[in-house]
Length: 358
View 1 (cartoon, helix red, strand yellow):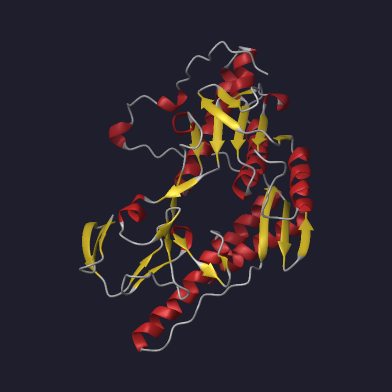
View 2 (cartoon, rainbow, N blue to C red):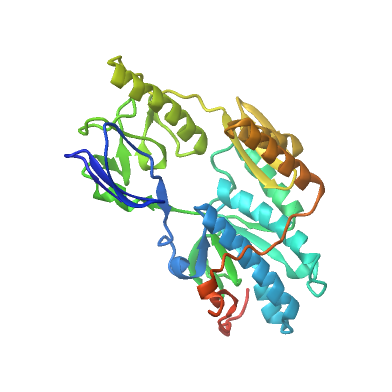
């Protein structure tokens, strides 16, 4: 939560409570935060996706919406409750939209009054194609794959405002929805702002070997760091963060042993995204894949990165099971005993404003 660079001490919140820790070497890898201030009303009415807890909250909210549709008689309300909007057509937005479409179809089986046409996913992207980090052909393949799943992809559709009943677009159109998921925008971690270190756009500047200039034995990697990869900047992706961690570990050991450190250098192995169950797009070492081969490659790569053989086997078994059976729609509600009588505010619905849908 705080770092005293001069005296080599830090204040950290751990499972054992708040601890004061002295350090010999300090690695800054605390990432970034979701920037929900990009669009008016997004902080109050949209669901961010940055942490595991965010994903669980979105999952529960989706199940709550489907359950409400089952009990609702007003057709206008049913359409609003069943419309899910995802803002952002990058990797996170595409994967959320595809996964959400699949999850809704699994959940619908348990609610006989909910019809397939009452559940809809719309993906809003403010530029002319999806996945701008990939070649245009793969972005188009992702769009087609999502469309086959019933996802409406709106390109050149920039969110101008979000409220409890939907999203206003920059062109004057409106999308009515009770659930908006935000996958765009990041901001600097507040801890990075407080540290007296050189920064660009909120990211800590590093030297070639991942050390921080002007701070003895301080290193930085990941989303919070501005890392040079040859003549370019390393993208803030998990693949590069893992490579940076390995390089940094070697450099810290070299520094302790009095050996020279090495400049960080990593060649991208490619980029991948899933567009739903058994579907994906990928570019690996120049090879472009779409559909099932891309999805299998995506799974294999992430399984390879998992630590320990036992965890790999457990994840592989779970993934294999999910290939043949519907998704588990158990509502994961972590309620404590002293809060069991508290009202569930998530199930309270604000009355929709009388605004025409377009």
